[in-house]
Figure 1 (cartoon, one colour):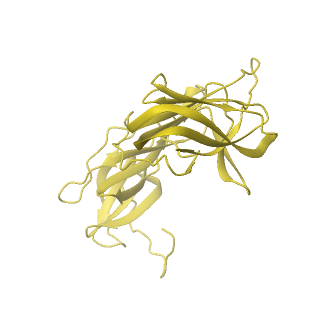
Figure 2 (cartoon, helix red, strand yellow):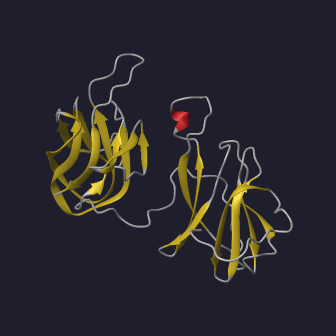
Figure 3 (cartoon, one colour):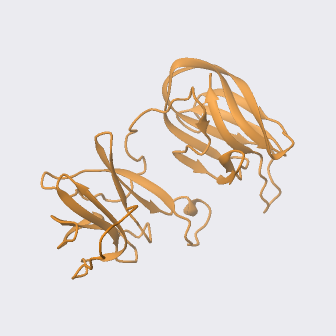
Length: 268
């Protein structure tokens, strides 16, 4: 919701299992109110109405309470003929620690409606996620923060570049899904900045998949001194998942070593 006119309307009766984080929308004549259900752990519940002001009827769970995630705040959209629900878990946090704090991982799964407008329940976020809704074009500049999955990276921004990927360490990686190399390519370019340097390995379909190129990243003169690095590729065509695997000098035990910053990339 980005705007509202009129007076505030108070719901007369608290919706069953409601906790916080409402998501309000209309679809095919029905009004929906999805929400984080009672903590803890939270699930995603929802209610329906024939009017935006209610009365609201609790319909159950889109995703039931699950100990794999303390919280689960919904966002719901229709896109290219399918329906999707967003929420979160702590999968990225649990890669590095057993302690809990609020570092949330955004999750997405396809959602299905019944003929009467009610929503089919999902068990929990799937490991693979939904099928891609489209293909990624690698022949135009793509932002480095375009990510399907990642490990040990962060993001930052600057007036010069906007958002970019940072905190890249030896062994960090980015996964992209369904990249369409339809016309084939022979060259990869990356816009990077570095005071240390390293390499980007380009692999298809898995972390150990076919190596199609290795791009050397030199010291550009500083972490915000941007230059374009390029490398030649073995021939590649068709649709593939693409992995950027970052390599470089390891940090001393207990320390962190940032290899370089990564702004955007393209194939030619």
